[in-house]
Image (tube, rainbow, N blue to C red; front, side, top):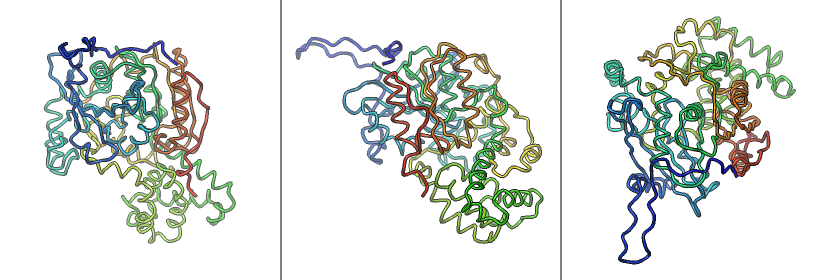
Length: 489
């Protein structure tokens, strides 16, 4: 076991038990016992049965304790069976709530019954303090911004710019450190992050005051100084994964024969026609009016990815059939993620995403929509994010001392990375892992074959086996595969 970092909670003292008599005073309740109570929605969803909820106040500016507070919502699912330790699960984004885990958490609890599972909402998301009133759960549209709420929301964000810039990645990492210190218990302790959550976990590793036994990084974001794989290059990442699928089709006689002259020639011709403005019909028949964005979106799950060549055949031969195809075939392929919408307050925070993206994770925040369009000419699989970023205007915070800073004193790390991830590319993860190892980090790197983004959702057997080895100070297998149920027939 990795017991060198075994620790107790930072600021929650466990009081010594009194004498075992009816007249002896009871131990004073711990901070954890005072903070948590039964969640109001625990009876609404079977997977959340028995969960406990707390709202903890933390400093708005950790370095300025008198500058106000933020509320941080945390859900706890107590360990099943004998308690071994705890796992803190960090959602992606920036802008996702902890509820992105809820559909899968029952399986996670079954896989690791000895661990308390803590799921916080990052500041700016879910039931934690939001950037503006229009994103709060009790606003007219709930945590989603409606059309009439946009103006007042951004007005509030700019009028209170000093408050806005406190919603930074570093302060979110301070929040995690604070929450673990306040609510954590004895035993082993791990942090599990997905996507942006992996970057947040690494920021936490730079500033933490509490000890952890390891970080699990699922779909590792590129290092912040990686100018080739940052958010401004998202469409290039999509296209690289999509082109790999095109290449695989070209080597499959059955797949290649579906296209006159072969898939390479047919695909390149279609993209050239779209870029030249010769296929206005696709704007009518494709959801969102952009086939390249739709193809990029289809890379996000194995099921939708398997439909890409059907979509291309229709776009080339019978585009009028595309609307029905997307409705009856493609949309159901995203049911796994759509199920999250059944929980309240799940809306993604576009304001938080814009703030952190422009300030920190986008190396080219000054790009215009026209520049993006020029860069994406010739690409066949693209992301709408690169264009959306050009319209987001937020008050920016300065990059602090942790930005691009070398790592040090890292805990053991397990990285789980799909080799067909269109959002956090394998090449970016490999470079980031090299940085960690150069800093002396003990890093296990597992490549999940044919997996897209967010490995846990598609390869739970692989993840569980890798975590079992990692938790027991053993080396996991260097590669593994998708769950059988996730492999398209």
